[in-house]
Length: 113
Image (cartoon, rainbow, N blue to C red; front, side, top):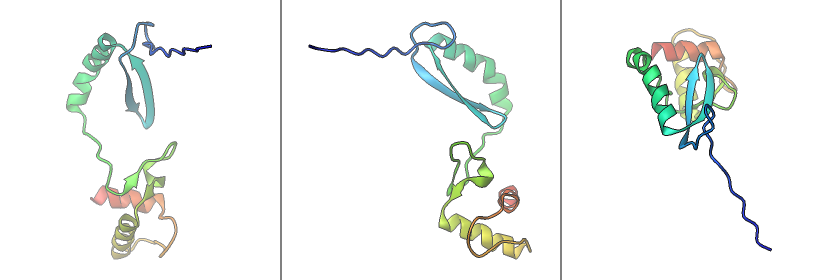
């Protein structure tokens, strides 16, 4: 007996066939929506005036935002954490030799760079 399983990709707005999943974020919350080409164009057109005026956020090297985590609690490379520790010490901020770096220290480092 043969079995055939078909998976449909459906536009979340109108139920038409979707072309792709569109990801976006607002106020720190990340979203995904499956859209047809026409509905994606509508979304892009609606957001265009805001995107043109907005600043693009570039993730600092060595820092990856984890699922459900904020940038301040994200995992980072040894090199990046050593760089932040050195900067914090040079600026008189409390930082331990090992372990997690506090969110406030990371935020101050990122604001300075």
